[in-house]
Length: 82
Image (tube, rainbow, N blue to C red; front, side):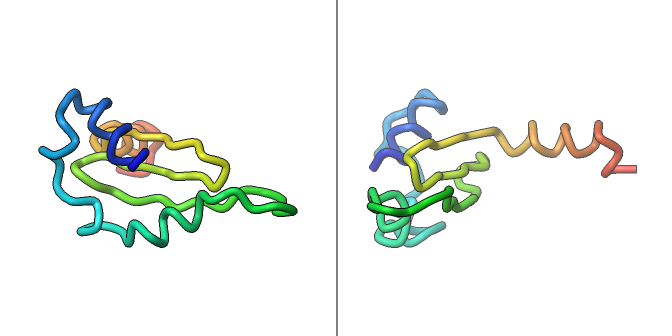
């Protein structure tokens, strides 16, 4: 739910207007990733694209969202597009 709510906020839209997240990733597996794990060191994360945004969800609960066109521009500016 947090991923959908965060993406909807970034897109300034109602969450019900988004394509279902389960069309991109298994929501149960995503929930399992971010559950608090006692004794776990480090970070596990998953990166997905949905609705034109690249999202990374970290096991410690942080979600980063970047429009895909910004990522493409960064790659091109960095010389990857040459």
